[in-house]
Image (cartoon, rainbow over all chains, first blue to last red; front, top):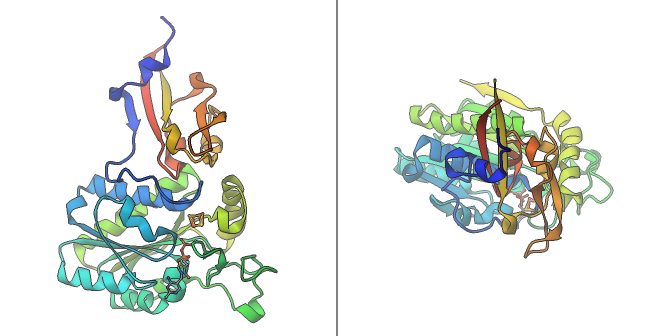
Length: 256
Length: 76
Ligand SMILES: Cc1ncc(C[n+]2csc(CCOP(=O)(O)OP(=O)(O)O)c2C)c(N)n1
Ligand code: SF4
């Protein structure tokens, strides 16, 4: 048989993966290697596969993903810092037939928006919350967040987080899983292909659950912030696996 | 038995050179270019194209979705 040329493989009929059409043409504003880009893609792929792009409303947060509405070609609004679950509550209660999700960082969701997060979860709003935990405040320069690990350096804990004076890291995902209003609570990660596939399944479930109006779905994604952590992208993913995951254990915490 | 061959196309101008795809490839296909793109980033390319199986791992971990993956079955 004649030698197979690359051009024989690279043909439209042989495509097995291509960028979802729900991305706009704008290049993502994230740093090289940042997990935000992967999670954006998974959310959009799920929406595309479910065919609900015309029935979905997303809420962008404050933080690096404040411009998520620039990249996601669906209806979106942007909430003041931490207020996404409150805004999502209002939107979902008026548009009960829509799929409503928030996309929030850990500074947004677990610090400034703690009250909104907890009460939306406790009320059991029929929304999906996608929570990106990179252990710090990325956008503003890598300050300590409630999620920063003990001993972890950040720009406001340069000698490492001292739990005696700075408090303990908060596992807000465990916390909301104990509230009766949450229906599905899971923690995933996106630094390896297998974990990305699992995260996508969880995001899919969070969207599917909204059809049944049985409560809030909460999906945490443990992610990197290589700029804030001052590492290369590859090093940051290794650091994440070795340091973040023993503390933030992956898996489904609640599925009712 | 049919063998599987794959290939990828990298959107060179959108690659940010993070290198995460390199370690995700089970058959060691990818390397970073010596050249840089318009933004000054080295970009991923197929150094060993004949080893690509089109498994989609690289595109799965790419934060900027710059990789399109192709796959065919070749009768052996
Ligand atoms: C009420 C309020 N306080 C502070 C800020 C400043 N601010 C903007 S982004 C940000 C941190 C966001 O961090 P995080 O939610 O972890 O997202 P990341 O950037 O890491 O993705 C802060 C404190 C603000 N915009 N509004
Ligand atoms: S600062 Fe951190 S969280 Fe923000 S885009 Fe860069 S890597 Fe991502």
